[in-house]
Length: 275
Image 1 (cartoon, rainbow, N blue to C red):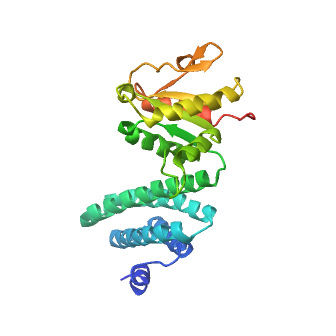
Image 2: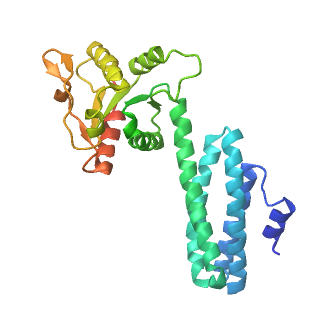
Image 3: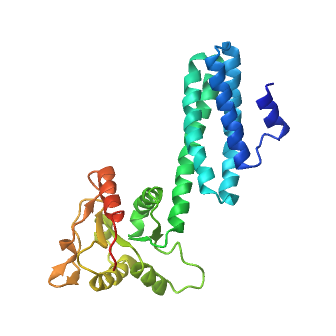
């Protein structure tokens, strides 16, 4: 076995600290690049690739532990670039992989998954550190869509308040939701045919609270954002000054989800004015 493989075996196939894992991974990448530059024999290059696979798996374990205990986001962020380099290096080795091709492809996918997980984790940390949040109101039939929007916003560093999942036991939910709505940077109302078909829903109470809050706010900036999940009419709600809810420009996710989400991000991340 090579020194890298010995290193992993001697440590019970785990690298205990995130920083050590990243250092070992970087050295392995440098060794692999060196072997390619020096025209090492194919078998030696494959051995380096296999070592890189083992270290990638160990780095995955270290990453999971790091997200529980590591406070240095910058240090964790380095792993994104390393994992991109790992997947590219392993992809380059496929031409000489031989019987190891499936094994190497498996670890290319693992490196890509770690890269995505780290990016999501960093975004979530930043969102939690943000004092502001976006409140999402929806009916239970549209929870999957609400969670999808939440994940998309979190990746952009936007904190999301999603119905009662943030409430602690013993809290009065109506008071807590009212406070979350009034303190929110934006209020997203998800409308769909599912909403229109409901006779009763707590979403109507949230809409009423949000409209009362909107009336107190400046009229020259967006705060209440209607979002269409499916082709449907915006329900009638009187918002004062002779206007109703359907006078507010909405975002349509029903026709082009990606385009609609980019429009939503543009609105949310625009420079903010005071209330």
